[in-house]
Image (spheres, rainbow, N blue to C red):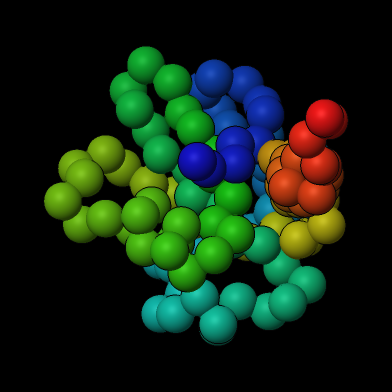
Length: 107
């Protein structure tokens, strides 16, 4: 399951740049470990009717979003990691999963 950043259904790239200081990239980094720790890679996919902005939180997620068999246009952005985690609810989702995993069943 991916983590999406909110925003308008169209114009998401411009919104993320203007509102959160994201920077447009010509292409994604060659490898996930090339992303600075303080930064987050965002992939905006244009599905024609709407755009989705996904937080690339792992190498596997980056590979899924950079699938060459998917014909939909993509725009790659780099932005502050803390901001991306907050917008996408990435940390909240992981904290909830840890709570659930640590919860013991009642007897």
